[in-house]
Length: 386
Ligand SMILES: *Cc1c(COP(=O)(O)O)cnc(C)c1O
Image (cartoon, rainbow, N blue to C red; front, top):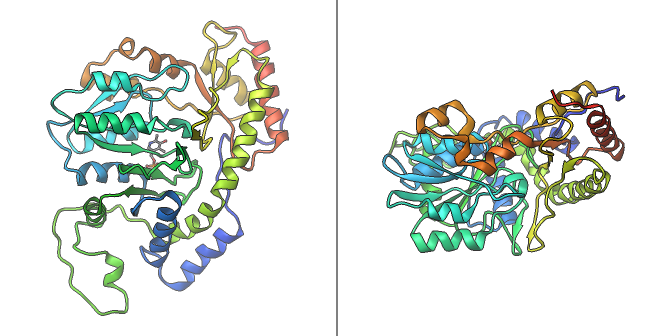
């Protein structure tokens, strides 16, 4: 038995990050300032997007993308049922209707045939979610977009560093939202970014993120003279601070190494778990680079333990896991507001019941991983389904 509890994911924060945060604190510039501007440039260069706006979260990026693109009351947006609720919440917050779409078996990604079949004259946009870091087929997404005149807002919270056909996600000409929350592949503790090739959208997101002011606040306080601001719309308060960007400046350069480490651990899980009654994730599509954000397994239907029983058994063996996710359609607000039935989303419902995410982070050691596999084996062998 392990002595310490193994958490399912933890950020890697090194001395460079600490020194950079201290530098911000000592500089006196702790709010939105030069480090946010540097981090935006660095992110844009990495992804290959024309415009990057750092924000307080990915949820804020999704909401501001919706607002900035003029999506609102009377509009429908196609959203996968199998995602974190932030994806659907963003649609609700602009007064539009999220129309949920079932998953493809195996990968759990949005079923693009089902999405296309759900298009109505009110459909304005589709929100593909690159679940676990596995890219949705961007050729097909953009073909659906062009055929039906839709907007695309990608939820790439898991997918900084993922690629479709040799191009990084975020560079496909759509609005793309990234998350730098604590558990994500790189972290600014809280934070996110919106990337787009649309200069007007980028300018609108910048205004909306800071009260609707006509120009960036940090320029107002710089040494090139005082200027009055003007409020051109009622905006929000979703800016990133320099203290957050200080972390990001030292996280992003290490992302590729971390993804390689995650990939090695992923392949090792595949080998070590092969004898157990668990379904391991499908191999990444060779046309893609998978950011390996989550390693998700499914308990077998009728297997020795239910998913929730397995999670509880692992906790007693000091192993933490995650559930990504119980589908949006199963949460009371969405179920009751739209009268949704779990049987209407059979694949997402089944995944919601059987999926768990195993510990995976660049700091996970082989010994930690052995502990996870041993605990899984012991739990499943001891298990009798209640
Ligand atoms: C984490 C996450 C979000 C929200 O990210 P925040 O930065 O915490 O707002 C949105 N969508 C998905 C799929 C996520 O996993």
